[in-house]
Length: 154
Image 1: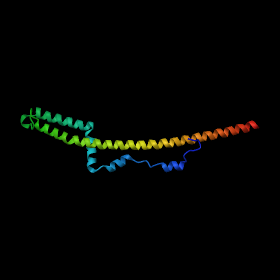
Image 2: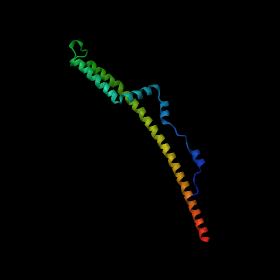
Image 3: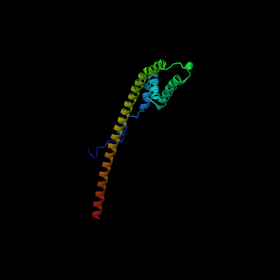
Image 4: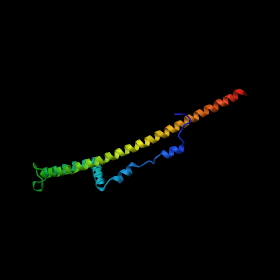
C-alpha cells in the first residue's frame, strides 16, 4: 500500500460497528425452559451438588443398615426405593444437563464470534495507525532532509 493512501479516521469510524454484548444477547434468546435447563446444569455441575448427593446416599444407606430394624424403611439387601430414586434422578437430570450444555455451547460460540469481530476491528485499526505512523515517519525524514540542506547552505 502506498504511504500516502491511509484510511481517513472518519472512514474508519464509519466502518466500525458497535461492540455487542453477547452475554446479554444470549440471555434474551433463552426461553423460560432454557433458563431452567441452564440453571440446573450450572447447579448440578458443582461440588456442592456432589456433596449433597454423597451425604444423602451415606445417610440413606447408613440408616437402612444401622438403624433399629423396626425403623428401617428400605432394609438391606433390597434398597429398592433408593435404586428407584437414584435412577429417576439420573433419568431426569441427564437430558436437562445435555440441553444446558448445548445452550452453554451456543453461548460460547457466540462469544467466539464476537471476539473474532473485535479482533478484526482491532487489526484494521492497528493497520491504519501503522500506516499513519509510516506516513508521519516519511514526512519527518523529508523535513529533516530539508533542514539539513538548509543548514549545509548556510
